[in-house]
Image 1 (cartoon, helix red, strand yellow):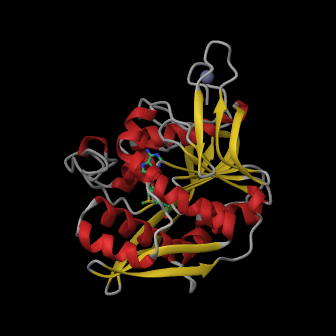
Image 2 (cartoon, rainbow, N blue to C red):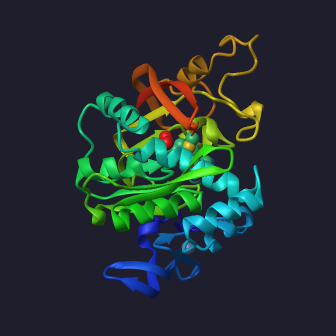
Length: 336
Ligand SMILES: C[S@@+](CC[C@H](N)C(=O)[O-])C[C@H]1O[C@@H](n2cnc3c(N)ncnc32)[C@H](O)[C@@H]1O
Ligand SMILES: [Zn+2]
């Protein structure tokens, strides 16, 4: 994305490919061709990092980028004990394991149930270029690519999760550590269902400033994202902006608001129960995404169909699972 001209990331040119394998660039750089801009973006481990504000991202993500991934599972388990509970290392592999399990567990991963419910809401099977907003370890992007048989792009800020998604794309295997109990982890190395690696790409990008031009995508998935970002309304606006007029998107959310992710003033519902919506997140979302939105901010999207109480679960360790009842909506990009 050129932050000056708002041109799409697809206009960026590869200037350096310092580590390559076939057509894949593992390390290199892209540059914005705009004469006045010429901004450079790195590609690391096959993932372009396209951010308006890379310094603030680097502050918490650089340790993931620099983390070596060649240590044996033996050494990783020792380091896990040394670093201790709640350490950055513990949080990183715990979190990766939670989402990798939800996306890639061999027997009916929770994510597939959610994806099937999302697909059932669409009027047509996805086709054309689709975007998986907040792709985490990538299952949604893989599923989209399999259906559209065109390019599916997954974007996320978390480099550790993206690296896992990209390594699954490259190797066809999901390799990750999953918490068993406390600091004891099981190491998983499972095959994943067939896919065409050429149709899948992962980008390190912020969902509140998506690095693609207006109208780039034929459709989008926004699964469990609304309650994870500092500005939920901004997420909806960006989703609307990058969709083609008339395009469909599926939004899924358990409205699991938490102050650590979103300050309460920005929640949709979940507060202000004296207001007409009585604190209902669903009522507030419907108001914001009504065809004649009165919110003072038009996202360009409206709700066209809904499904509710769809099961979603996250396994935190072998004896703990958090269950959610997720609300799903099919959104349509307005044509005017
Ligand atoms: C609750 S998870 C949902 C992941 C996936 N869509 C799913 O349903 O399993 C939220 C994801 O959003 C990512 N995320 C949070 N804020 C983001 C932002 N501002 N830009 C990009 N990704 C973000 C996190 O890294 C995480 O992968
Ligand atoms: Zn530029």
